[in-house]
Length: 424
Image 1 (cartoon, rainbow, N blue to C red):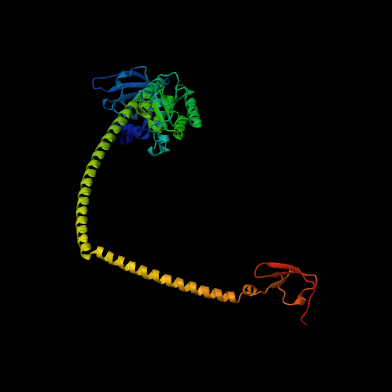
Image 2: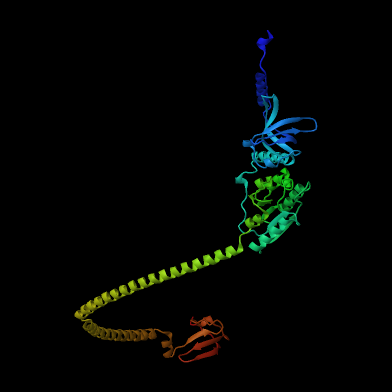
């Protein structure tokens, strides 16, 4: 019978509730608030509607976060939660877990989606981030040239380290054209390569005002920039995609200026402190070396005195030994022997010279006796042919009329042959 297969209303509503919760799950719903009530329990009940339909919603007190008290009828919101059924009345409703103004909520969804995408690609990884130079040679600033941010940055840079030059790359920081101009400014700074650090940012504002810095192309340009990039967007509580991909995130534009340059006065104080420490270390080192030199000097003097005393004793000992050996007497004896030897050498030399002179005289006489010159002394002559200077041995060697030369014991005669008489 039909009554046996029928279910109760409660059972029906329970089944519908299960189907709704399991089949639909959690989701975001955009609509306009109407019929809002706030009972003493702290829960908030309202309807979400659009031009064609509406749905009941409940936002329980324990789930309420943020500016829940500020919502009112007529507000367009983005509600996140799960679909369920209020079994007692059979009305399905949205159990709200989070609610935000509709415009900002959509932007936040896009923000979270892009953040998740770029994070998965590794663009937020710390190991790909570059370090900021300790003292940059030139700072590049990409921002609006008329905004408050540029004034704040320049003021802090001028106060902290005025000697560092600055290059401004102007770009819009709000509106539809802003992302493209910011990307172009980064490309210009990269191409010109005149800075070694870049500040990219703007002053504070609403989420819509800062939205240009949540652009995907800008995020990729910052990540690909070969120069270190400091993101300085809005206030400390504001976060943009540019903050995550930049090498360093600054809480404010002024904070970015403090990051990229050191405090000159602090450096001067540190240098002065270091110089003082070095001077004190030098003074202590000099004092230590002076003490060491005094100690070494005393040791050296003591060593020299001991050495001199030892050498003096040795000298006295040697002197006594020399006196015992009487070197003066040995010298006198040696002098006597030297004089005797000298006399003997002189006598022997004279004898040798005399014998040599005698032998030379004898040899001279013997040589003279056989010399042709000695023959000339006895009245002979040596006759030579005047033309050939040949000694004539026979009369036949010349002819009548030839000139001859006759060498005598003293002088020569030049004559002409009148007649040749041959012995034959």
